[in-house]
Image 1: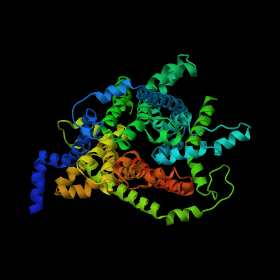
Image 2: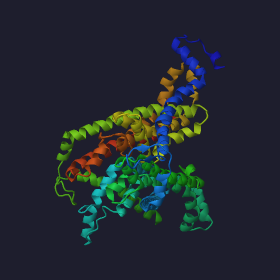
Image 3: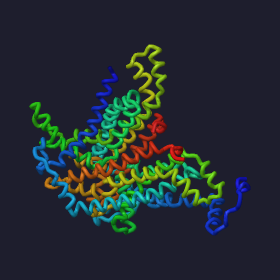
Length: 301
Length: 262
């Protein structure tokens, strides 16, 4: 044993003794390490989530506006039967989908260039340039687009130079699509870049040797191998759009699931209904993640 | 040929990413209160006015307080969790990282509403502390990811050597383990700071009537008169989150290998 090789046993101070005791008791060590984070998440976070989920089955008494803690499915019935909420949910999911497709199309060329052609140095610089906006204030970037798209803003001015009047995209659903695509784009570029980097160059050479032209190699070799990475990126773009409620308010007049949830909770104090509607994006994401796992996206993260 | 097309497309995407931010930087120097393009007269006076504004100053202080508090908590909880998962085998080990990433994976509105409901039912009044609790919850994962990645890449044998040479657990941690994970802690902490400093959605549910800097922007976007000040604050926010992220990125790539120092 290692202890036998020690030249002289160090003085057995109280501290040393207690540390040695701790060293021998792995279970105690584990407890000390795990208790704070698991306690925090278990009590503060998971506990809150569970209470919220349960409250989705409560209801707001229409007479007293007090929350009744009796089990009911009426919130969910209201969600399904009211066409307004169906429209809001449909719009949210549709825009999240369109944003995801847009981001995949925008991200692929730059990710491909970074992975295949950029020098080591340029690759590092481009990686940083893509990464920085991802962490740069979400709100500021939405606000920037509001300024750009507004009447008399840079975009309006540019169009006017070409004699085109009255192209004001703010506020509109097109602005929302544009801003979401812009905000989440780095989340798509980075996984695709990582995925493309993992494709060995020899596969592309083999494809060329076997007579495939560039387009054929792209379609039959690169695209299938990069698909899990695209799906991995789409998890971010889709889920972040799905759960958002700030951008719709700032650049459009449309409502997202998040807006209805926010207003039900904050304005009308109907926490049960807000909680019930908030389960919609969570369930949609759960299904999305299951499909993504089938497509191998988790290995590409 | 296709290579050149891709280069142009890449440059286009980078322009797309940076032009909006650049626009705000330009507008911050616009002397005119109305934000029409092109900018005809320039000034730096909005910066002075923003610095002298009490509301902005107290929002900045609250943001810093929240970000520092959340970062400190995230460093503690993230590091503990990383050591537990890396060094031990136990029931539910695989679910730990899932649990930590959940606040980021779920829509912010769900996290915010859940915490809000808990604060209400436990009658905890809104204070900087409630903001910190919310932020720390989603910041833990950045520290955890950085530390566990470093632990996986570094070898345990130097710790065993230290113990064999007579150092106790604390001395080994202090002299060996901490220097190994030091830059990972710094990187994770900087990312946590940036994440907290920018956060809006969870904050709207955990702040009550208090204003962090992003909440101040959100509230003042409705007031056209305040635009010049919003621009200045926006510039400041971009810088204060971009710098930590840049440093963190350099730290976690360059100083990654445990062999860089002897």
